[in-house]
Length: 237
Image 1 (cartoon, helix red, strand yellow):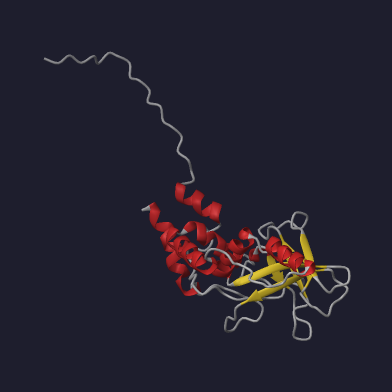
Image 2 (spheres, rainbow, N blue to C red; image 1 turned 90 degrees about the horizontal axis):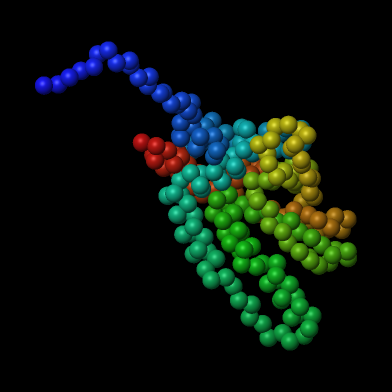
């Protein structure tokens, strides 16, 4: 026989607050992918429109940021990039020389210092992710010798409008996602030019050719970007 206490007061059930943002929404917001989920990423809008100061890279000027974010969003893509990078850089490099003069030996040591292990690793990653290399070049006072090379993240660099068929200047910004002009600090750097003896700091840019694009290029995997985005989304289901 069972006894039921109907006269006993009912207990209130504690309802825990439910977060409005799902894990998926937080992930997309963190990696900046929430605005591209409905677009065809295989055909991104690379407008190259002139903003008055520089050439936009993508409709929102953040296409390189998207490429960086996909590396973290898609484990499949990241494994391919890392695999390719290891095959490119291998075990580093060796300098074979018969030089014994003090000047040449100093130059070799300087080269090893500039092109260190981290620099080579970053160079390979920039090539595989962006199909683009951007280096800050420092000249000596006589402008006849490069005394330092600094690697710049390709996503931070934008080109200015060409003058006489050449890009004369680049714009460097640590964070292009900042829309407020006071926080959006831009640095204008002259393009690399051995004949320009006035500028001791210049920006050297190498990039592959993409048909139809004049100022920028797309990575070799551009046609697979939709699949890379899907790979990052599949973990939610």
